[in-house]
Image 1 (cartoon, one colour):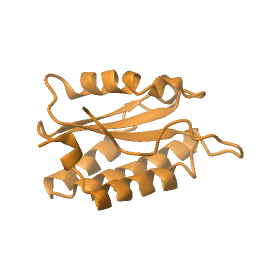
Image 2 (spheres, rainbow, N blue to C red):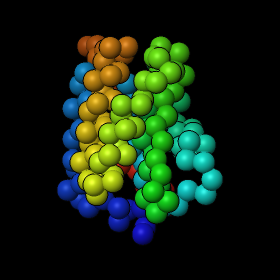
Image 3 (cartoon, rainbow, N blue to C red):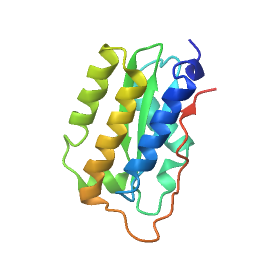
Image 4 (spheres, rainbow, N blue to C red):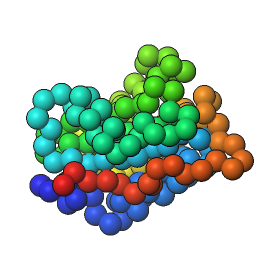
Length: 145
């Protein structure tokens, strides 16, 4: 399956809406990226994509990437250094568990949208939204070419 075929327009819109809602409560920047096949470690590939998308360029270093390789059936969640220095080591476990559970039920867009909302709520504690916060990253789902 091509990465862009993993989500239909309704699913993409659901995720974009979740990102926009989550970012109303946090200065963190959340992105979802869909790949086809991940050769090797999903976390390592997610780190590569994180830097390629420029997610390390946010002012507070508080970008979050949810990476999914649809054909390989793997995913990873990456937080930038600002997040990793502020949160406990198991910070993403609940979000990751929710994605895995949703995917096992075939609820891909719904699971990602819920995970984005959960991430936003978790980030709010460490990186609350402040007046004048600028959206530094695209809210659109990105796809591997």
